[in-house]
Image (tube, rainbow, N blue to C red; front, top):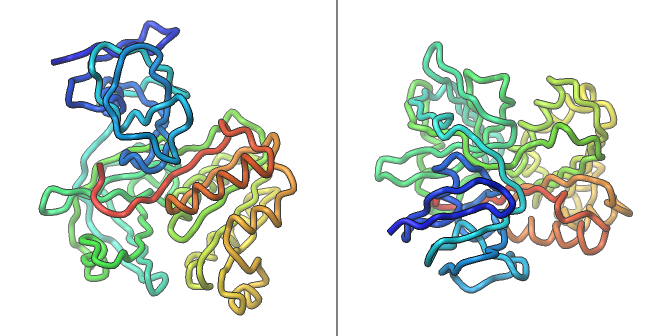
Length: 332
């Protein structure tokens, strides 16, 4: 059975099957709303259902009061919804490529930087901060952010953390030049709001650095001049596996400030950074975040606690907290 979903206050309507979640139906119809994990973990797709009934799991900590996670909601009839934001996209813009491994570097004991080359004459269209999906032989998929900026469109750079027991991360260390992978892109709504002029705070943990690298490289290429503070955290100094990019931004981005947040006190002292977690570094670095934009990438727990500090303790407008939550395992 097919139901009708209407975005309140607009003429926009799209079909949604009884066994299809609202987010997937919207994306299929070319309507993009905020989302990241698509697994009910990050809370980015939360929005109101102003009319009609839905079936979805019980609300958790990431679900704001009076709202639902569109990636988990199935319609029980026609609906009227009130998303936080939406815009039209071309569903045909998402492409599948067979890419070749160009270079595979172990950047840290638990991180590989994988450089993939697209077929000759083909280009990947994406926005800085978006991600792709790698298709595995068993039909499952894994999601990884592009770390390269969009103008480097003949190449895809992925930062892949080794997950214990992870199906794809067991394969990655053995990939060699010339090996092929099947990828589809772009996905995700984590991207720079280029029209904004607010000061930016970027808070990342581990390979959450990848999408923010794409964003900052894109800003440098376009000559966007906004004050940016980057807080990059790890358990030890190996977690900050690509400091060469940070050194480049110090020269190419006016008003750029870098803060390392290392939980190992000796490594933190050696780097001259903050000793502790990224949320503690936010408290120590930022007296107020009123009027700022925050871009945060990392594990669900890390993103949740950083958001709490930014919004509840430092006065950030919650609508100006943008996140990409890294959830291991198969893509939704």
